Image (tube, rainbow, N blue to C red; front, top):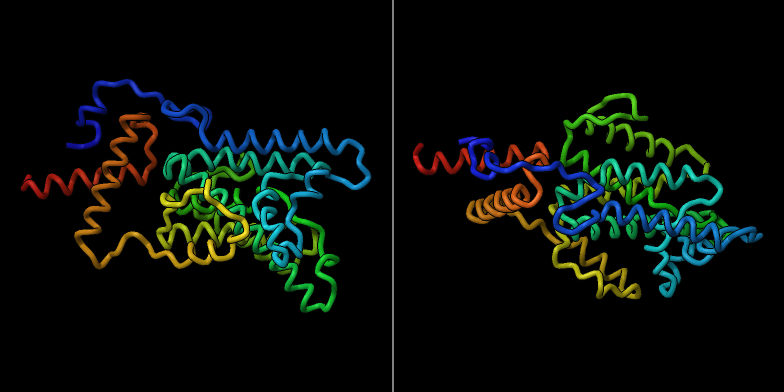
Length: 308
């Protein structure tokens, strides 16, 4: 019995799930994040007006080289990720397009709450890396930390993390670079990483390559280490304890232990149940290729265990 022989796939007419709508909870978290970023951009534009000191919100909420040295400003590790340059709307547009194209698929794979936590933690990781990078550079050069670099703003680190995680989840999916060139997701990810490494090593421009690479590393660790943030309650987040919080997070072990067959089987059963629930809620078309393969393997395993 294959996927199309099951009761839930025969007798119902399903609508494909898009990032713009969710049958169970309204707008997806991806779209909510896009809306928040766009609203903050135009709010900053209105507040700034013709201010000679530049962006009002950036002056308050950007990450600076000395942020990491001032625990009372650690909220900037999160807030910078919702600000974008008022001098070039493409900064906002490219980030939000990337989040739209890859965020919806990743969110459907991870779930709404897990996706939000992943995104926000990727923002924080990028902010920490940026401040640490510039403060260390100031130390090595023997100059003032506050004078070495302007602040960092933008969602690009978190968007890069989402993009790379998509490539891990769906490496053989076809995506279109610049809306034209079809490439496999894994190859696009390699190109993105390579360009950012080259940019980090050789560029003196204002692109935050260090933040992009922090997003890449965060996504890779999330996927390879099997991190899950289901027990993480963001409502209890205390910025003053950010250092110890991230340290504890990094020490978490993967939930799946390959040397424990019973635990592995239980994990596989739970994943199959999750996919079946997703079909019931959102339809067969909402499944990724990986989820379809997982369900096929689960069905085959069940048939073998019954001796069919």
